[in-house]
Image (cartoon, rainbow, N blue to C red; front, top):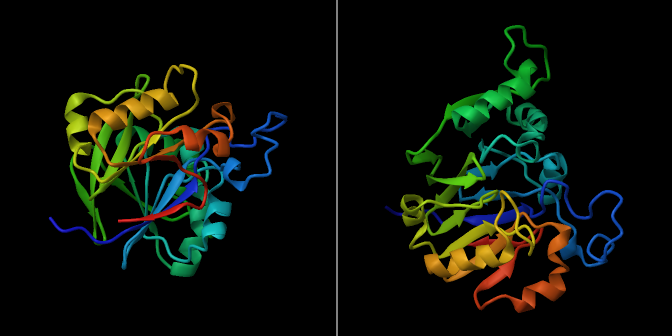
Length: 258
């Protein structure tokens, strides 16, 4: 299968609280380095003809303004936690200017949460200006959005199933602390992988930085970027130089191409 060339923009690379964290005075939260300012985790994926976003975070509106996104074909969701779905209401701006609904791709669990969190978007009596979306169910089967083929990858966020996604040579996984062998086989052969790396200390449902590095080594992916980073990991300027060759901390606004 041939894959289109893609431009991937990191819209946010922070954990659920963002960085800086409210009321925190640590050296990361008070850093003047823009790479230490992290909105909630999301990426923008663009081909020559298709534009999609992975997750609509609480920062979605600002992320779209900052990245100057004018059209949006679809949103693909990883899982239903608030830091990944809370910004969906702002889809309505794209509805207004594009004059059509936006396609939503999510598994059953995430769709149920979206309908529960945004019931007015799915009510029989729909008032003007509400978000207009078309729900598309995804699970384990590959699917297409425009000219972009997508392979779902099932990972575990403690006991919650979360979807990662492979776009040709690029794989994106967030909110994971375990990947089973058959799903790892879907990742192998990627040229670039993105994994969550919350902090150094063990966490119940996220990879630590050291665990994420170990996964990259096991999968033998030549380039890796780490995301969903908390202020507990440390300053970008201090941590990034310590990483193995081919591995980097992602930061908001980082652009990579395939």
